[in-house]
Image (cartoon, rainbow, N blue to C red; front, top):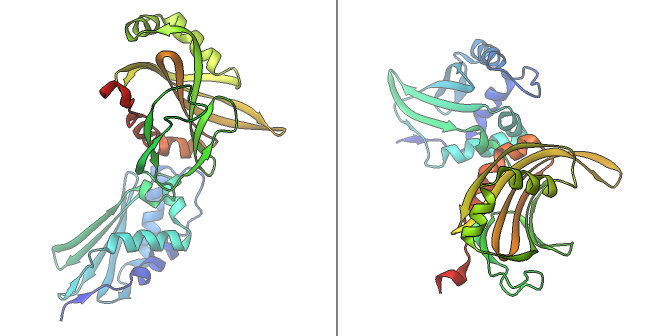
Length: 298
């Protein structure tokens, strides 16, 4: 009878027990090699049950690789990867791998033949969600100023109404936020006119400086001109400090300013943790790339 793994918890304690070198805030590749060496020295030859014996551990770059020998009748379950990730999270070690950008590979051999390989990327250890859900429309919202726009919400994030005059919606997860803001422009601007304005570097810099006026010691990380659903837009990233309830907080913010006729639409994401921002930036980009202005397709 083929032996299958029904519970991966018997493997995880081996991984954690022998990798208990003190983790710093930011591990170097040399630190990861030291962790791998200590794990290799202590797990080699250990029978972890269910027909699995630890062969050893090594590191290449920022990837830890654990190798195991299995018996002839051993085969992995289909959801083995999900079980491993869940066990890392349950044990409280997943954030260590996530924040230090450590990938983990598991190799299972029967003799010289590779029976199974499981690869887990560091971001998969995070409690942050990287997928999008259903569309959210602001059509008819009292603060939308007549703009008909919809975009996809991030899965698992809380949706809140804006608490200030120009803020329509907020998507929130812990200290991370994505907001939709709309302000009246002083005049109607066509798409061609917007492209012309955005070709002026001095004008673009003035827009960014004005948008960062609420930050102290602000720094422009980058900026570029893009198109969002056929409308010209300015994309820029800022870092700086902001005061909230007497506390000075470091913040990194990415913003898309869309020139929409006689309105300026701001899609703004913000994190108070640079590691969270770096991991979530692709998700923020996905939300913005999902923007649709339905009326132009009628």
